[in-house]
Length: 417
Length: 172
Image: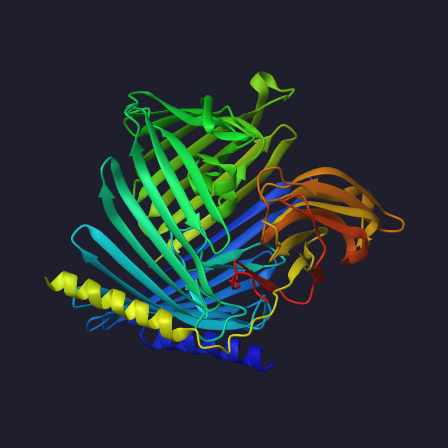
């Protein structure tokens, strides 16, 4: 009950605050509705109401998100600069249960040539896996071409896009699968010092272009030291090697990754990989071509064709994630939605200036699947369009038709001010 | 010269932190794995339930088998129930009946284990306020390393869960 009152009070306070300072407000309201005609049902409803208020170099944002299941997320963000410090704060409420879910504070500054960053976060007990809280102190600097980076972890970890072991945190709504991602990941089981990571990159010698070293210590002691050597030249122009060498207390692991460089293509992109025998990874058994791509533009029309040949490992991502060929494991790792059943996509996109400000877009993607009974193995067609009424008001529509008929149609409105 | 001094200071501070920090009192406990059954979302007479995994060990869940009567439900039209795999999961087989409301299914993921995210979406037509239950004793979860994951609990009590909620390595 107290949580509900707090969330309600926070929402009312933000609305009142924003109303008082209405002159400095900007924002967007985006709503879309999808309908499955047979049997008639609403398959998707999304309404996102975002309000921004800027004052004194700081921008505060309130973001309310409604889905079919109801009011799911209420987010408050603030970001700006205070002297030498860049400050970012994020606050997330689970509106469906009126609970505080997560917050983080990130303060960064450059002092004496060193990047300092303080990351602090806490995860609520209302979240399965919670509660948790902690912070990370990050320092980074350079000596010539060598970059040195240090993370001192006190019950938390920070997302590192160069290291798959440090992914930040993603919070899901269990009933809908809707998610939010943040950089600071508080350790569920951590208290006090939990780890320190030292990364040295940018040094090379001989034929090795780049050597990266990562030392990770936890409160239990030494965890690992990792050497990553990238771009080892072989003398063969199109063949390089990457080497990852990891030492742990009782193990040593060596991963050798041959990479192929096919150079610049002029018309058709060839997606290729070197194949090796899993039993004897030191031998290259061949070159596998897992995809082909073609993109061409004529004026404001873009034609694109993607063909996936290795469908067991690769797939075409959905329109929301750029319609690209991506390895399935990567798509799953990074939360990119993809079409598992289609092996080819033909796309036409038209973008142009609208009559009254803004620009219109029209996109038609046609997908083909194996073993379909339809003409040319056609599987599904996705069409979406966005039309400006004026520079601040857009109408959107989308429709999907598959082999069983009209899958859904939807429409939406986006208003900004 | 200035950058060298700065980098030296950086390294020195890092080493001092590492050497002085491990002073005990960091007791940890094991973080449980969960099978999360989302609350049914109903619009009109159409509904759906999302099933997710959280904190799955051994490189994540790669298969799930729910035996007969492992799924039970009320106010759902049995013939309309359909299970669909999410995040790389493929439904191999499924069987749902209306009286009594029960079902079973098998699904797998050939590419990767899922440590935390939705794996199944079950859609249905409802005749009223639906209930949807999964019985732990009838559920088997296999890992990406082809071993059974046994130390998990079903969860229906919390509306939100976190993926990659970090645990210390080898938490004890």
